[in-house]
Image 1 (cartoon, rainbow, N blue to C red):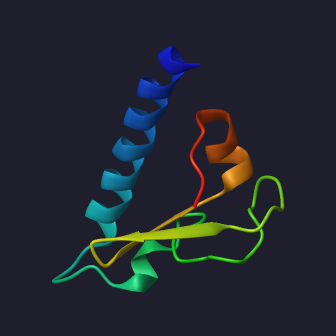
Image 2 (image 1 turned 90 degrees about the vertical axis):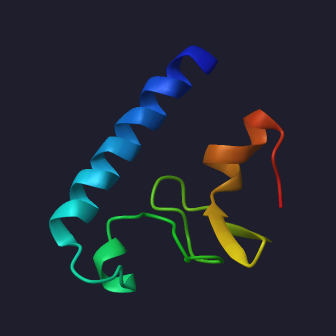
Length: 78
């Protein structure tokens, strides 16, 4: 599973950079980040499995994730 993680992360980040580069003007607004599936959607259903999206905050930054799809197998939980 770890061997698949790195290429998947690179793919997601590459796609995000391409999309943001196309959409970005003077600043990054909430509207141009609509392609992010769980960002700032705490409590709403995960688009993949329907479980509630969890959020954690660190250094005044919110990270949103699906505990079922992204956390339980890796031992991460809010």
